[in-house]
Image (tube, rainbow, N blue to C red; front, side):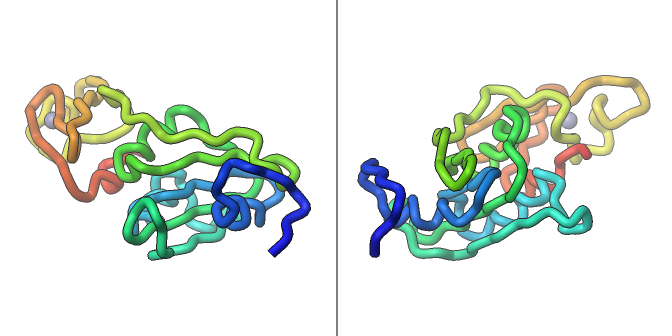
Length: 162
Ligand SMILES: [Zn+2]
């Protein structure tokens, strides 16, 4: 298979998959089954006509099965990448311009996320009427509310404050 681009970063398969969009972001190496949560984090539900392609449970050498999300015409902000890292800690973010990957980096898990997730504990100070900004400590396998100590491991995407 010949490619008119000549990237030699040792992963041709990766380049081929990524090069299918013109401008936008490809989120690769998402854990299998998390693609729809990635879309939820990005606030994409298709209603605004965004051009999105999702591959789910694609065989991968790095993960047993991975998902891949391609969003045409949009580059992700750092805040979005931070939250993304919570559910897709192995993800690679590829920024594509004019069919070329101009930036490629792994997500990094932040130590703390503030103001992005809402605590599931109804008695938590952050869920009351007082304006207290939510604050979660990022754990190895989840997040912990800095105020009430509630730990969330699954369904982190459902806590996203939109
Ligand atoms: Zn809490």
